[in-house]
Amino acid sequence: MNSWQTQTGSPEETRRLGELLGGLAGAGLVVLLNGDLGAGKTCFAQGVARGLGVPSGVPVTSPSYSLMNIHQGRVPFYHFDLYRLSRVDDLADLGYDEFAEGDGLTLVEWADRMTEALDASITVFIDPRAEQQRRFRFDAHDDRGRALLKQLDQHWPSSPG
Ligand SMILES: Nc1ncnc2c1ncn2[C@@H]1O[C@H](COP(=O)(O)OP(=O)(O)OP(=O)(O)O)[C@@H](O)[C@H]1O
Ligand SMILES: [Mg+2]
Image (tube, rainbow, N blue to C red; front, side, top):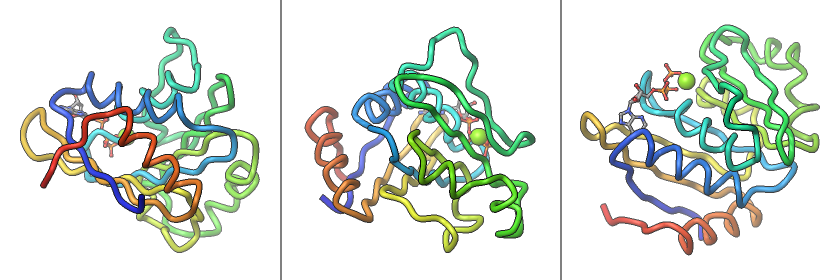
């Protein structure tokens, strides 16, 4: 499955969707996350963290200033936010490649800031449709990504259009 779409009607539902992905995901997965300010990227990331087994008492926030946060779960969660980055060198300074090729799940908010430098199994685009409604589009870039989308489809009610 190369592409899969769904929608959520609340932040809680977005967290559940992220949690499903986090629960299905294994070490070494890279997920790129795009969408405007306030689209719900961090909300989705909070769910992914829970699905990875990051304890619920651990706050997962936008790494807009820190540029990256690390949380320990069943596998490590490497949470990046590239909003403030403009040069690929800045990404290298963060040691991005070592994390992305490492043993954790790497999730990158504002990945479209430098898509050409990022190699991922899945790209997620979040599109706000109304106050509480968010459209999600998942695109797979390799076999691993395609297998994951198939699993999401099996575990979550997809919706047309
Ligand atoms: N269905 C929904 N899914 C996710 N967030 C929603 C939804 N409906 C409303 N919201 C609200 O949208 C906002 C999403 O904020 P969030 O920080 O997750 O966005 P973001 O894409 O990470 O933004 P930024 O680029 O500024 O980091 C929150 O205030 C949340 O309550
Ligand atoms: Mg954010």
